[in-house]
Length: 113
Image 1: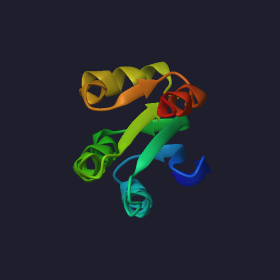
Image 2: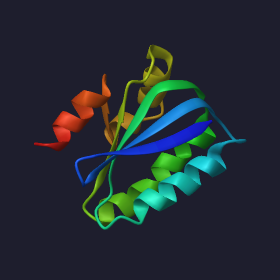
Image 3: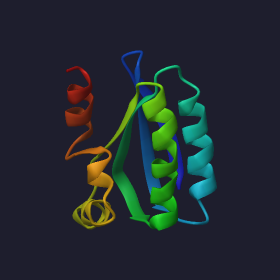
Image 4: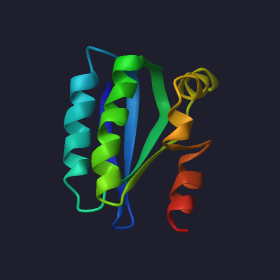
């Protein structure tokens, strides 16, 4: 898995994930998220457009970050998931805790509200 971060406006980071997110690559995601959680008010859009596979170990990294994000008044949203990953996220209940958008631009636009 490759993880890169781009900033849209000063306060919104887009985390672009590419490849496969599983037990072998979850450590890299944890490290990248740790850096983003250092921000005073973490506002993160996770771009899933190029993510080809994700298992429960990968998804758990986002869930464990939620407490830190919420305590600082921030948020994390997902965008661009393929139909299988979108269904997986709904099945495990991520839709109850995080906003899920069809496109990255939609998630960034929602951040401006």
